[in-house]
Every structure is written in C-alpha cells, then in structure tokens.
Image 1 (tube, rainbow, N blue to C red):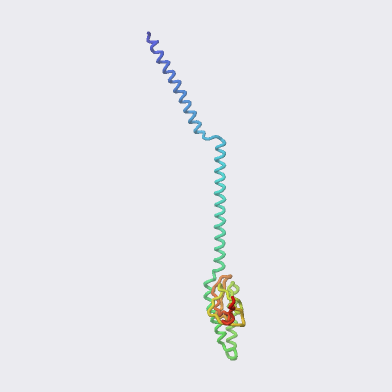
Image 2 (image 1 turned 180 degrees about the horizontal axis):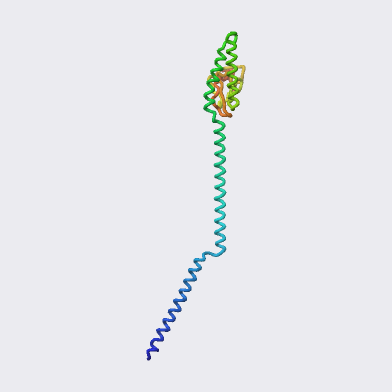
Amino acid sequence: MSNEETINPDLESAEQSTEELVEETQATEEVAQAAEEGPGPEAQIEALQDELTKTKDDALRTLADAQNIKRRAEGEIDKARKFALEKFASELLGVADNLERALEAADTDNEAVKPLAEGVELTQKTLVDALAKFNVKQLDPVGEPFDPQFHQAMSMVENPDVEPNTVTLVMQKGYTLNERLLRPAMVMVSKAAAGSIDENA
C-alpha cells in the first residue's frame, strides 16, 4: 500500500469531522441568536400591556393618595382657622363672668351707683357682642331640656312646675366656639317629685 492510500482515509475522516464541527457551530449560533432575539411579538405585546396596566394602577393610586393628602390638609387648615381663637376666647370668659357678677351685685336703686351699673352693663354687652362676631356664643339654657354635651348639672331639685330634666337655674353661663364647647353651662336641673313616681312603671 502506498503512502497516498494510507493518508487518504485520514484526510477524509478529518474533512468529515470539520464539516460536523461547522454544522454544530452553525446550529449553536442559531440557538444563541434566537435566544438574543427573545420571545415572539405576541409575548412582547402581552408583556407591554401588563406593564401598562400596572403603570396605570400605580398612577391612579398615587393620584388618589395625593387627593387624600390635599383633602386632609385642607380640613386641618380649616379646623386651625376655626379654632385658632380657642385659648384667647377662653381667657375672656372670666372677664365676661366678672362683669355679670358686678351687675348682679350693683344696687340699681341707688342713683349714685346707677350710672356705674349702666357702664358695666354696656361693657359686658360690648364684650359678648365682640365674642359673637367671632362665633363665640353664650349658652343660657334656662327652661331648656338638660343637655349633657353642653350643660354641667350642679344639683337637682324637685320642681312640679316644669318637666323633669329641665334647666331651672344657670349658675354660670357656658360658651361655644363654632359649635364646639368652650365651657359648659353650670346649671340646676329639675327632677320629678318623689311622690309623683309612677309605681306601675
């Protein structure tokens, strides 16, 4: 056997191996390229739609949160504006009480005291009117039903002339600021006479 015949089978085998290697390399490159290209158009559209839906939800949630914060802030500002005078008005209540006590103690029959009493009365009325301009209202509930939200019962007395739980006397007037209680009215409340209780009840 000649040298050429000996080399030819090896050469053919090497050529076949090279062809197989080239085919494998091409197949690997195709797989890699397909992987790089990613999913098909339908899958991409679906993924983008999901992302858009999520983004819309996030945007709506953020907008709702912003509106809630704005509404809460407006409410707090309104409340602060309404009740900013609370401490100041509370301090003035003692002045109104003292002017009222001075009027009660004044001897209006005495001609020397009468002008002074009129001056005190005018001052007290001016103070109450000034408070009312800023929504500080006086509670003088004589003859009204007892309301524990606005009245403080100091005592209960039998009084057959009025319904039970009626305010018969105001010892100290109460005040509200924008419908919020500043100070309860100290009152005396009627109760049913002991003998008038319905025994069949």
